Image (tube, rainbow, N blue to C red):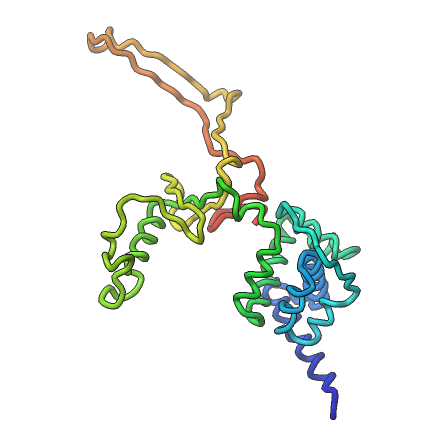
Length: 267
């Protein structure tokens, strides 16, 4: 019986080609190195059982990449910060890291590209297991929230009320349509949603409240505070306050913020 090495090689090359497309590169060798780096960073944090379940559905050549040089750890430690996982992916690329990850956000792009391709080969349950092994610095944090604009929240309420499909076939929560909603707090996958008035349409931010703070430019020459006595102007006993200052929401750690449709160097 033929061993079929040609097919194994062809399947492996096809997988690498998909990685290259996801990375938007024509460099197949770079795509292969990035795949190896991400897989090794993952196996460092998965148990042996999780590893075998994970690679079971992958092409044989990709399995070989996963197990090459594998020093099995019976009780792998869990990373505590997402930045640690990025560093591990970078370090696993060894001497090629500086070339393969040559700009801010390159490691994050690489991880997303690899998972995009992996999702075509392994079922959702296995993807969940793997994602759970990646440092959950955000997910599960007691003060994590998803900040959305009013339009997104309204659309979510309507969807839960059955208006994402034909209303005649789905009346939503408790068969009440949008009448089910009475202002109570909402969650998505267990994460509280918060309406951030002023947030641009079709955007969203996931962040810990403790990672955000109000900031203003104290040294800005445009800052101004005035108290105006209104009695000479209208005879009243009133005063008016004028406050001009540069203000914004600031953050401590950009790597702990996930954004949608908003530029973010971390993701």
